[in-house]
Length: 164
Image (cartoon, rainbow, N blue to C red; front, side, top):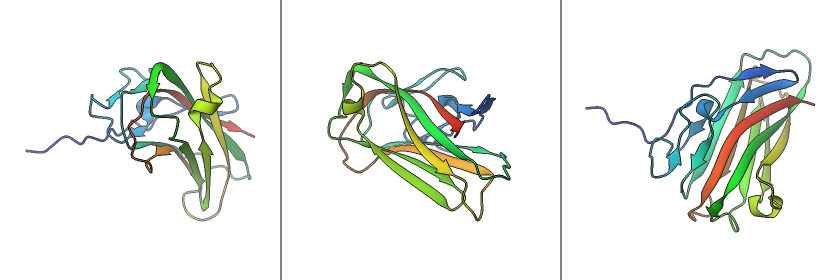
């Protein structure tokens, strides 16, 4: 009997926008996403993914077949919000990652200092097309896997890739 994976594999779809692309949570890969005690997954394409609690945050995705010949850079923004009962973020900075060809970028962000009473938080990282393999694919991720503290109350609304 085959066992069901506890990790959610997104449907890897994305939509073209006027200045780039948008990826909704149903398209993202979410570690521990298939365990309902950790995540509330979206039912529909544009629904949010809601983190109940984890001590290992890893959400990744990609857009592919973009086949861009000229050197373009994208600003990749995770649109998120912290719920009123959010916990564990004070000493748990998250890391945004973007990879395009052989170019990889990381950015450390502290969600609690940047929220300033706003419901929505959009964090960005800029990536420029690199060389080598996979230059028709942009990978991106949101991570907090190092401090092993429990955290919860995060909603992921979308990931936007905007030409810069």
